[in-house]
Length: 370
Image (cartoon, rainbow, N blue to C red; front, side):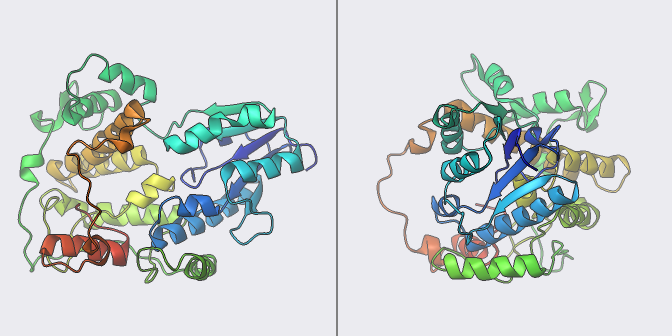
């Protein structure tokens, strides 16, 4: 490849082949840019497992794109060409390839979005910032929903999303005659329950190399790096979702709010990381869960409880975030000023629930309750 028409930057949480920035990409004249950037791994002290998961998933996704015929310039953390930041890496690529345009799907974080906003003037190159179609509710749609409301209630928003997407609807009415079955999702879990484990995957050579890298470069970050069992490919993430739907979804609703000593997962899916980085399509997973209910393989309270987390809470929190930024992260309603106590990081406290949540998070990079 010689002249570059579109330089397409793909971020670490955009590992989706149908991403808007990749639509219509031409292998003959477009170049995809991806990079493992120190600034993104350290702007907060991310859990070591999270860094390893993202880097490995990025490397596998780059391979997926190459297999589809696209040209990918992938910059590893230890590469001599690594410029540590999005803007620095893009400046290096622009100087090297002289693209006609820069193309990127909108960022999921305010700080990155503001960084992207400055690229056109900085590089004197047109920058196309495309919407992220992987969500059900656009920023404009959420703003329109919020306009004039004295209170923002997730339940009201959720019902709109149910109607819009036709999820668990019988005509214009909710399946079962109710929108919300949360009152049926509060059973106490007993030790004699059979609880399947989330699908686990042994590290392949790519992941093993990343684990060594993270151990060497981010050893002072919070969390245990191993054992590492996450899926890092689309096929494995889809297998994990299928395993949850088949084995755990039928009891997910009943025990959704339960906590049980020594049981970090119960019937939870443990697939949020795959949804958030783009390995799984959230709406497709919701359709699969609904199909399980329609086929009689899962009760309505389980299907509704799961779908509410995705098209309700996930979309709602995203909407509030973009509606209230900037400054939302600095609000302090209760006026708290004391630092977070040490046991927040160590789990060394007599408070059993806090201890369990912190230790689970340290060991697994996961805790199904806050």
